[in-house]
Image (cartoon, rainbow, N blue to C red; front, side):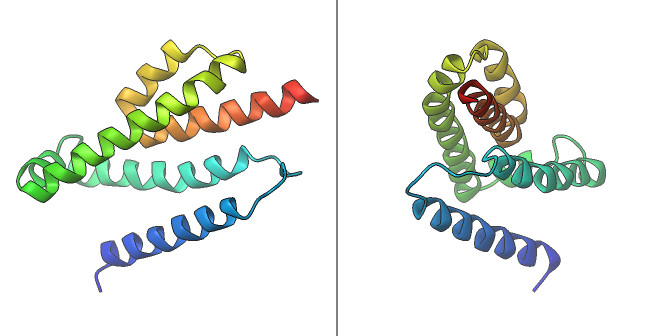
Amino acid sequence: MSHTELIAFAGFIVAAVVMLLVTQTKHRVSWPGWLVPIAVVVPFAAWTGFAIAEQGLFDYLPTLLGSDWGLQLWLDRLMSVTAAFYLLQNRARAAGMKSEVWVIVVIFTGSIGLLLMLARTLYRERNMDA
């Protein structure tokens, strides 16, 4: 297995475990829940920075647009980020965040901005209750 295959497999395992753990949470967690998206976004942002440094900012385009599967993955990512933003933006507004600012962040950074928005929303919600 190549290092990229190992990283992809490890990422899948971590995501599956986190999703399964979240489904088992019946009560509000006592620990700061905003740490979960931060713990996910930090290594992802680091990997993104590494990929940009190694291959350039737009070197992903031939991979995504060069085949039907690449285009399908690109469209799937766009739909997923749009749906997640749609579901999160009302909570963010209720927590006092300006969703207009965050939509720009999410448009230009994708999942990184979305995870940061989620972390900030959870942080603000937790501090509003205190």
